[in-house]
Length: 537
Image 1 (cartoon, rainbow, N blue to C red):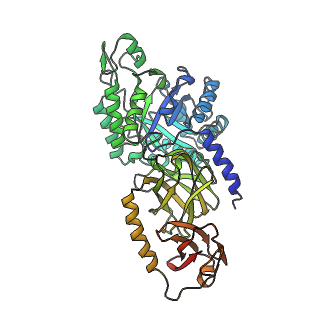
Image 2 (cartoon, one colour):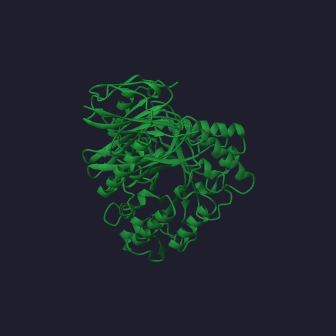
Image 3 (cartoon, helix red, strand yellow):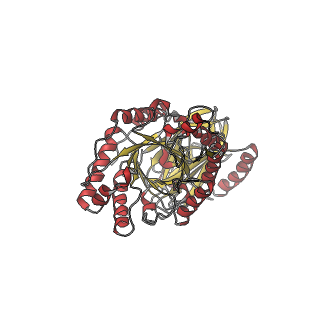
């Protein structure tokens, strides 16, 4: 039984809004930060959604070797979270081609459990947002099966705490990464580089990499395209190349092949069209000026409408990308394009999403992708820790926790600006995959008003239960079906806008705050719907 109170939720929402200045848009921008190179203070946080600290290394019995530069990791977590960026620990890496510890621990049930427990403890110790598994080259056969078993166990442990699990995989030819892995990770970082010493990361190879993984069934939203910030065969960083005289607009210099700004932009557009994000190895190899490759990625993201403050606001937002929450859990999702959804939602649970921009005042359509096995429920949408409640919406029964439907309502934002948006469970029993915010044009509002109104009026019962007094000034009394438990009461104005909600079973509703006018009160319970007009004086 949940005991979370709305006042506590408001305080936590406010804290989340204060701590975060970035909305986690659907398009991911993931940068690796090595323990041995680069400054935490030099990172362009506003252009990233995730940072992976590289690397933690396992022992043969499932422990973790001491992390290199732990103070750097702590500083990265503090700076990342202060800028709304999620920080993960990357485990493994190339490690001179030695993956013997992974092979040993994954093959032994006790060692696997040791490893999972060690990672969960490490994540909690440093306040991390998850784990990026960099066992890059498991073998086919038993090794591949052990990898899947390990990833499944780790996924269950991390997702139970609302943490992420991602993995770095080869660009193509990854047969040892079995398809079952797709269901347990939040996304895969595709290492579409190091194909060979020359032309090691062409646009063509990037396209092949995305096609290979999505062709095997990896959802596009989980395919994060990797790009290099270094050259082959010299291994010089992009910053070093520029210092030597290379052009930021070329891909070749002095026998080295690299990705300049035009290629990075083309790959970012490719990732928008055929994937769910872009990743780079690694951040310290970039420059912090007008030739920055990360800035080139960010420019494309802004142009494609996936920026941190998109205009119009936010667009489609994955439910699991909350900035703060209470009571909910993230789980694997089988909806279109897969991914994760938020589930285990009970009454008074909530999720908050910071820094969502409403560029103009007026009406916005908000859609929610929801599922409910048997009970349905009700959600409300609010701004700034519940200080502004935009509206309520009933969640229907869909027949299964992964049987999805889209519901929507129009809400009015009185003042343009940037807000923390909250989704609150007035009553639980439902899952949510994503929600989408769209500005409604004046023409669309006119159509909605003329279409919703007749539908509601036509649902009025011929022998409607009594509402009294009618007209009413302050308190509306209910009889008959209207005060029967188990249903939901919704009051609409004659433009079809929800203005009040209550659970069935109450004998009166306060309407004192409603403006004078005519309203429709609708009682819904399963397939039953009863409607009656009343007048507020």
